[in-house]
Amino acid sequence: MIHLVQLAQQLDQVFVLAKHWLLGYVPAGVQPLCSAVLSVLSVILVFPLLFAIVTWIERKGLGRMQNRYGPNRVGPCGILQPIADGVKSLTKEDIVPITADHAVHFLAPVLLVSASFMDYAVLPIGRNMVIVNLNAGVLFFFAVGSLMELAVFMAGWSSRSKYTLLGAMRAIAQMISYEVPLVLASIVVIMQAGSLSTVAIVNRQATYTGIWPHWFVFTPWGFAGFVLFMIAATAESNRSPFDLPEGESEIIAGYYTEYSGFKFALFFMGEYIGMFATSGMAITLFLGGWSAPLSFLTWIPSYFWFFAKLLTLIAVFIWVRGTLPRLRMDQLMNLAWEFILPMTLLNIITAGVWYYMPTGSIRWFVCSCMVIVPCILLSRGLKQKKRFQVRTYHFTQ
Amino acid sequence: MILAVLTVAGMASAMGLRNAVHCVLALTLGFTGVAALYLQLDAQFVGLAQIMVYVGAVAILIVFVIMMTHRSEPAAPPNFISLWTVGSVVAAAVFAVLAWAICCSAASTQGLPPQPGVTVQQIGDALMHRFLLPLEIMGLLLTAALIGAVVIAMGHKEDMK
Image (cartoon, rainbow over all chains, first blue to last red; front, side, top):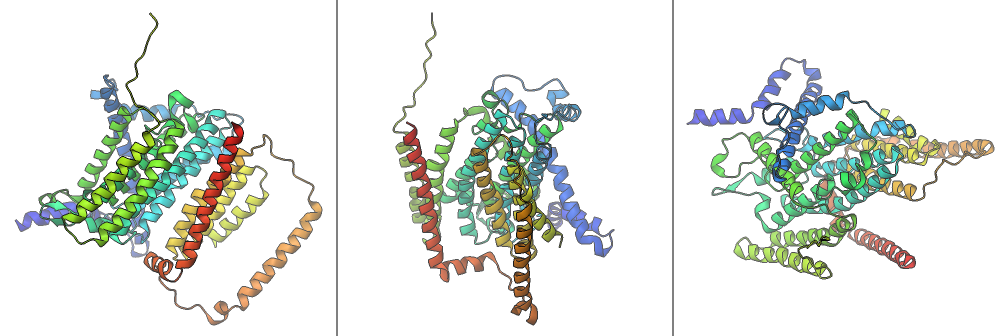
């Protein structure tokens, strides 16, 4: 029995032990540098691979939701489609408009991809598996995420085209508007955990009462915060239903219209990697990071749980993309400033009330009311001018 | 040293480049350099807040302003030969005064005190206890600015009807 427990623990730490073993072959002076390089290399290898798999999952999933097959030519069930896409993007001609600003046009995808990858430095992917345990980890995450907006502007403006400039302005307005609720929704977690360090936040959630975990999503303010965070994350990554700045039927491709070939692939990858990073942060803040959902499942390695939760969230993103229609720009901004932002502020008050009330069922009831009642009232109040009804189409006879 | 060179180069090119958006991007580079200097001095919160606020918000704001008031060609450079010499003399004088002030200050003559390890918790405590009044006044100021912006935009929208 103890032998099995030890085996489970070693399996859990297998990547950490492998890294220490590899570092043993390197002279002591160079070890910190090599350690950093190995961690970064593993992130750079794993997450683009996940990106390739997710593009396949997305196209098949969206296809099935739209009552068609997804890609099914290139290999069994189209599984080699990402490789075909990669080869295509590498071999396409790199067209740069002659009036474009070449330096900025070149640097925009570079900045986007660098900012997206830097986000992973503070995500704890497993027990003891974080690249850098910063004291202000969550702040670092949001600070680097705001670099992506600058990259979007650079892309849109440098192409010197109407569609790109319009798309870039819309995209930055959207990203800035939704950055405020994103940060506010994560403040509740910081309040409860008492620390900005992602490792400390996950460690707070990795305990169990009975078989139920102490994840923050299982509290009223945590659940509301999680939902608000996910909505803001969908808007930050310019994903449907918030993808007006890059919707094909609206504005060609928005800020990356004039990019072809590998730079387009870099943009695509940068957006998805950013989406994974924000999902990873949602998992760290609300869903308990690498901890198992039930206390008797802790023998399964921690990184397995992280990736399982990440894939679940990605599946939810794809599901939402296939289901909801695109929001118009003013509807999008109204949602951010009139609904999501007040809800996040009320959520902060609710979390404060939760912290100071004595534990028991009374605080569950009070805090649930404090979250649900304003949500219903606010949505009713904002909806009063509009009537939602089934559209009937009259075609000429 | 590298970071200082990067920051100064960024800020200098922000003033020297012709194209307005290039200037903004160079300014952003300078901001990032300052943030990196903060991080090198172990001021994690200030450094990361500098990136989040300056690069993420202020630079974007400047960019919006430039895009709204965009002129199709960059303006021709004015004839500034005579201003060059006066400007460089003034800049050198300011630099000399600052350098003299720093060299004669207590920090360089007596040596630095041991570095306090400032955590975010200490900053939060200070904000909530010692600096509560400035915090509330800043909140009031920001709210007034927000309301002012909304009033100006609303007035403009009614004008357009």
